[in-house]
Every structure is written in structure tokens, then in C-alpha cells.
Length: 358
Image (tube, rainbow, N blue to C red; front, side):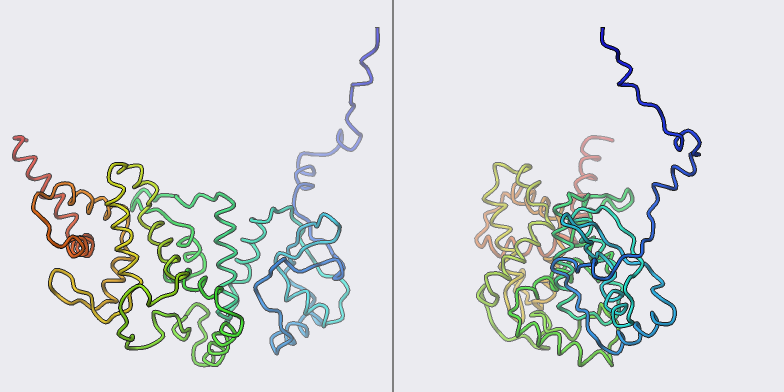
């Protein structure tokens, strides 16, 4: 009979005499001094590292005091490390004549590393529009790949937080739409993107808040009085598709499809009407026989959610009056949904209570 003693593993002397505190301490992240030559830039790093006055000041500070805040890096498969946070500190250390810098090494996947890289740099002031644009795009893609819970719900407000709204909240932007405006800048050719950055740089002496985009020539704010252009040719195909994606996400289109399988044509007509109206360039839009400033109509349509679309679908199904102009009817119901929906449902409840003898 063969002995099974060989399978017995005895604890080492270190394990026998080490304490739980020391074992936990071994699991903590350690700051390491890593040669600059082994620290490589993050792939597609969107933030520029320039040898400007701020860089010279940082280098002078490192000469005197060293790097006070460690960088963050992750191991590369072929050796060395990929910087996640600390690209400017690495360059400043190089200018200061240093050979190493303090680094915290973490095992991070691509998506987690991207989010940390973006968040650590968005805190800087005077970021260029192109830097924010590519950073937001990378973080949005990382959140979607990561399968992050973007449907976290507040018990009080019961409002879902989309990926773009999550990015906006964490970056201090006004809304998720503002984030997508930045992302659309990534579609510009380099020459036009440089013009946007130059325009922003020229105004930063008067406007130092990094998230203010009033000087960026987005299509929505490029002119005080928009040109009188009607129809969906007012925007490029790419821009229209971007807005379609925003609208589909806002109204939770996939959920609505499952709820109204027999009325998909009606649902799709509503979506196309929203896209057409939002993307149109005109001074006014006629709603129920009255001309409203188009920007007001557009802004209200971009704030519609699934509950508003459910209200419109409910109105369509319960309407018994012949509608001669379905487009104008839908525009009116969509435009008035945020202000009439609650009163409509309240009146139905009151009716049911009286009819049922509650």
C-alpha cells in the first residue's frame, strides 16, 4: 500500500509564527520605486502631456520634494508597467533628473484601468475640449463593457441613472446630454478639432472653469439665431444617429417593445417623430395651432422618459375620435405629456373611486 504522507503539506515557520495582522498587511498595496524606463503610457491616453510652464513648475517641485502622490500602474504581460494615473508626474520626474518614481501597482482589467485613468485626470483644470471628449468616450465604453449597474434606482425618486448620466454626475457636467455633446467632438477631423481646442484656449483667461463649454461651437449653440433650415438634412447622418441612440436610451425602448408587442409600428412612429423634431433646425415648431420656440420643444422632447411614452401610447389606444392629422396629434401629446400626465391619471383615479363607490 502506497503511503499518502507525501500529500500532507506542513505550514511554514513563517506561517506558524505570523499574526493575522501581519498576514493582512501583506495583502495591502505597497508603494514601489519603479524605474521611469519601465513605466509606459496608457494605450490611447487622451490627455496631453506638454512641457509647458505648469510642467516646469511640477519638475521644480519634484526636484525639491520628490513625487508626493504615488502614480498608479498595472503590470504588462511582456514586462514593465502601464501607467494608469501619473503621466505628468512621470514626465516631470524625467525633467527633474529622477530615475525612479513611487508607484502603486494594481492588477486591473482594461475597463477598470480606463475608468481610473479618466477619473484621475478629469479633476485637472483647463482641460481641452478634445481631452474631455475622448476621455468621456473611453469611460462610457468602459462602463458598458464592464456591465456596470447603470440601472441603480433611488428609493425616493425612482429614476434610473444611465451610463452617460453617471459620467456626467461624476465629472460635474450639467447632464448626460452635455457628455454626449463632447463625445460627438471625437467625430471631427483633426484640423477641426484643433480649431475647437484653439478657440477654448483663447478664452480660458476669461473662463477658467474646466466644465464650462459655452465657448465650444456645438451645433446647438454655434449661433445666437439659428438659420432657418427645416427638415432632417439640417444635421449629418452621424449626428441624427447619435440623437436616436440618446432618445432610445432615455425612453427605455427595449422595455417598451416588450410591453407593446402589438403596437410596435405606433412605437416606432413616435421614436421617428422625436428624432425628426429634435434634429430639425428651425426657429419655431407648431404645436396645437401655436408656434413655440423650437429650442423649447427640442429641450422638452429630450427630457421625455418611458412613462411619458406609455402615457402617449395609452392616449392612442383609448382615443375614439377620428384624428385627421396624426403627426400634429402626436406632437401635441408628446409636448404636453410632462405637464398633463399626472393630472390625467389623477382624474382617472377620482373617476374610478366615485364610480366604484369607494
